[in-house]
Image (cartoon, rainbow, N blue to C red; front, side, top):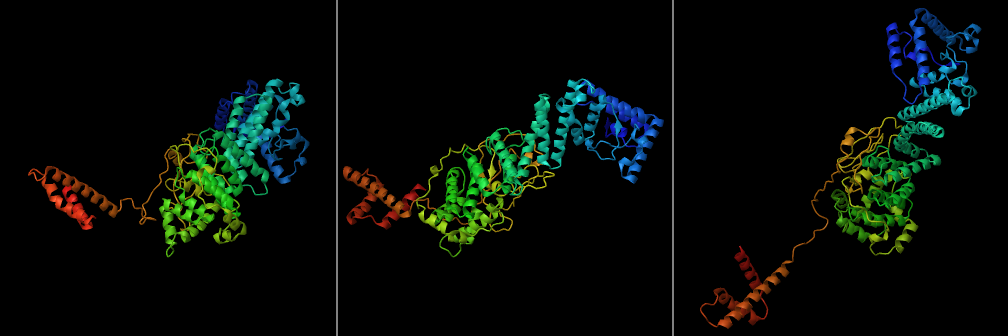
Length: 623
């Protein structure tokens, strides 16, 4: 049988190799043994090929003959271009460089060598070492499952041993081909190759450790596959559904977006949060709503906030205020731990609840955003003009870009409120404030040391669709980026790219502690070094508060209380003076105060001037 190989490739040398290089290559290749799972027969077969190649090339006369045949036929083929024009003498040559069998799948000009059937497994091993994975698959598949008659008859050696070696070689070719395709960014092809090898080993019931390697690679490959599948065009619904199914499997294994379970992807908590940010731009509004509302019921604060975005975006774009009301209910639950008053104000505005929107603004600590709203509400008795402008630009710059079907839409509050269905719903909406328990879900767990900021959630950019080399970019302090080729870019100043609307900043605490994992390809070491730290949230005092709150007692009430105290003292002094008559040991202070008390009792009402004087005298006395 002929195999598309030549002696130089067997030794891994160019045709210009010297005698010393031949000797060194033969020694090195002989000492490099294949995986321990291969049988002794396979190792011996490979060693025979190495020895045959060295024997021919180390002999000057045989090497000249081989080189002459090798080069002459190669040049002849280049000139003629048709392999069937070779002479009958060339057909029987031991060193014929031509592939005659199209089933080998090799180029017709590829050199070949004649091998015995006992050397077949050795040739497969050599091709595997040379990286000819697809050729190994084409040559080895016909012999799988003992379907070949020559294999059954023992022409290749012990059928049971040789069959196991062929299965192992083909499975290793699947493994290495999958890893090669992974590096080339062909993630679905890589998964297909790995699954093919895994199914082969599972069917044969051998080499469990190799199956484990393949499964481990499949787990690590899952995030890449998800992004590739979700990025498919809208008409590839089957592929996109498969991507969503893989994502749900990952979330199940992890126990949620901020869960602590091990999905064996190598992604820690922060890495996975960055990954979730990046896939959002590949999902439609309804896909995100379905996904994140389900995850919010675990419960999960991060999923709840992402569900708010999806409900708001879809409710506004599709003129469904009922979805905005659901977003508001979710925000009421989040408000127990986070400052989400600004988002609550936007929801209340879109629901026509202007008074509630104003109250929410008063409670908000997002001072940059409030400054923007005040600036655009000058000349108005309230902040509604600025809130309307802020809401419209916030939807345009911070919400819509993260939805596949809304990224190019322009939000308009005027068109929203002009919609008849919206008007009808708002007219029927009760005016009573919403209560948090209308959303029947379990309370959020206590926050842990791992946190993600609103800026992380709202400022994720798209994962590179080529996905050839993963790189990450750090966002502003307190915000992070995505894994493996995704880049989350955030403007550090707190404003979006056009400087129009400040991006509010606050912290959402996941319910689990960060989990250490293997670094996903493309995640920089700098990212990994900062994963344990909770992002800092900077709070800046405003120049002027929205409304000044009086926390000290009123002056008139204070004076009234002081007057009552003085009257009590005077009454006590009067009683003492009447009790002891005109005794000389009476207290001078009481005697001095008695005329004042008589004067007060005669007038019937305490004098304000007297009260002030007494108060000042009391203060001077305390000093």
